[in-house]
View 1 (cartoon, one colour):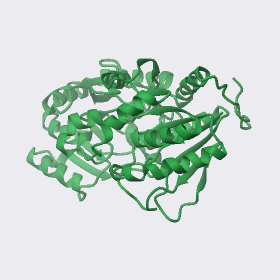
View 2: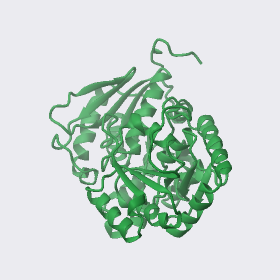
View 3: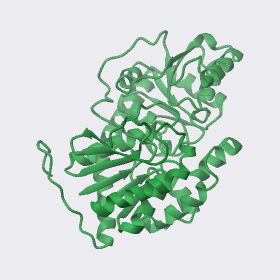
Length: 406
């Protein structure tokens, strides 16, 4: 099957950890590789953001990243990309008229807009994953939401016109239904985790005096690191390691001031951005990983920690409600409630047996449910279902050498 992944701002080639580079980049990269590993041909279409980029880059066996000329070839915030989506969609349409994929899978709302516009002229079947919804972002961020005002309306159009909408968690399905999305078009396929990299066994780091709590993610307020810093005063003796920002950066400076005001500055360490290959060792070195964003479309950090056999304390929002089993693989707490988080952490760290049990159960759950091979198989089932509904039998491409047969 020839699959077109459309990810206008989140390239699989980008360094994860920047303002606009996070879970979507990881998702698109890993899903594309897993689909190719099952014998399919994948092209990932993302916007060219540098004049030095070649049009096509081999990303792995069976996966090519295609840089689409849309707007200036420079870095642009994703919230400023909407004016360039017509150029993006016209380029896709010309490409697909010459060599149409069996299916296009768009990621994020602007990619959905571009893919549907290109499909209108070429007849390509479109599946869409939102990764985040404007209605949710606006609800939680209010005036701080920098999304284009057209976002919510466009998302409703995408939800009603895509052949399938692949939600990443049950909570997102409920949101989409409130947007009047067609229920028969909604499917749930979770994000995955690299079970070869994120394992309970492996190198560990010395993060300082025990117990150690780890918070890792992009340096934006909605990720809830402030809540963890404020909770630390309820967890005497614990060290908080914050990966993703430095104290000299704007968000790090803000968090440093909060830590000083709470009297816990001596127990908070900012270590900056961490390379992807270093994340598993960092996670294994913590007694617990804390991920308490205000809202979360899915949440890859808790899943990666679980795969490393580390207990997770997460906010009871979005995809966390599906992945973290409260009282089994970790704990769920209300978002933006430092005292409640502090109490949960204090009780958990005081019980080594429970910590170990949660970690073991977390690794079992991640390994049995969230491997990328399984996620790719479930995604392919959605592709095949909607292609069959449109009377289009998917084409099989040559299976790469060394790929196990089904």
